[in-house]
Image (cartoon, each protein chain N blue to C red):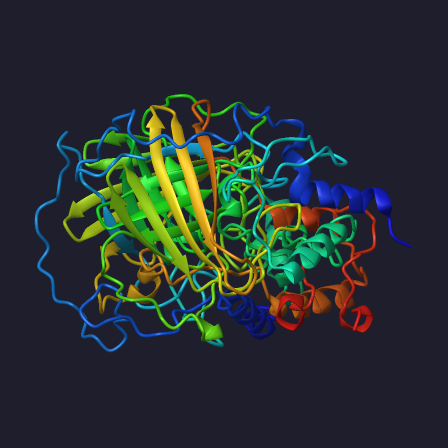
Length: 319
Length: 282
């Protein structure tokens, strides 16, 4: 794969940029849920029957993660080898059977352009903006029930409110980073139907994307008390030749102290995690320098107004 | 050469966008109401505060009584204690407040004194009445606040699972939102906040605090669609005594939380939010 090493190094820089969030400075009290769990043995849990709410539907409440054995697919959803802190992994795509995203030719060219290491600066996640829905599934998520709706708390402060009462999507003119999710139950499967995207988020650090015209259908199926399987089907005639479906690196499993993704699960329950990110994000400046030096577009990006940045760098900073 | 029209738009994006849609305040200095309304309860017996709430008032501009300013309607303040409605600043701090406000006229977000011009975390209580809606989600363990502005959120524990807070004197323990500990008192959710950093403000008028800030928030349902919000601020470095604001938030029924990605709007205008950590060296 071309420029893969440099690409992965840049991706590692993006990851580093995301690590500037505040960490709990003091170890939490022993016995509380706040224990970091780093040294705790992995819990041995025998799965029980599916917990259910009063209306007989599966009770998804709790914190689950489909990360698997480590961050595998935050960079590339298809088959990929390992490198510089990124684990190799098999394709997450279960349809089509060849495990390759069915891009239209122009879209594949655009995906590969985004994948170039010098363009890593463009990724909104490095700017502390939104992950796409699928990308959230590399990390722990917390399900909460509120006012008849299902709220999914995810990394980087994201809260998805899945509307279980509405049947119609929002008006076409309202466009959102994570779209407008409407949920319904099909047996023990929560089906989340999402439209009204704004086309800005990326599906992976490696540049995979869908457009604002995408229609995303997710299926969360509770298998037992500890396990939820998840698939996501993306239909977008603007970008792909056919709809395609992928899943998380591993089934989503309930997180406890010592579980594989417990440190990220903690961020969804522990008030010490503030998730400041944009504040003091110095790494982004370095990525921008690389981007602008490579493209010769100081302060100007493709598709943006032709204006010079008014944010001065260190040289012009008043002393 | 600075493009003034663009930078003015930036200021609008960062913090003045709601000016044109804010409704007149029904009653700025709302009298305290606590007993008249019996709120619904959650399954575990706590007052059910869940839903989407919004401050349709002028608190985002100035917590004190104020005359009209460019882009800002005149209005009553929200300080109910002390009774004169003024924030009890120490003399030096009153001067700093004045300088803070003068700095908000700068079009360039880099030199604008308002932390919100750079899309920094607005802090508490400012995030409550910034003008964008927020949603309350309650569980038996905690209360989650999801804010539309910048897709911010915070988690307020209502159990003692996390124990005492770390030493607020240690800068490593400082937070933009402070560290919360919550509890229910009758029909109210009370949130005690310490461990603040000193980088956030209270409003666009330059009202500010230090890292010694201690906030006690009190959320009380006073009607089916009315959430009374009280916050008491204590900061021995800046104020001469504690002071309290009070307002009523309204339930938003027509739509849930949408999104408002402040940094992305700066980016789209060519204002790259990659400035040095000025808040570290000021």
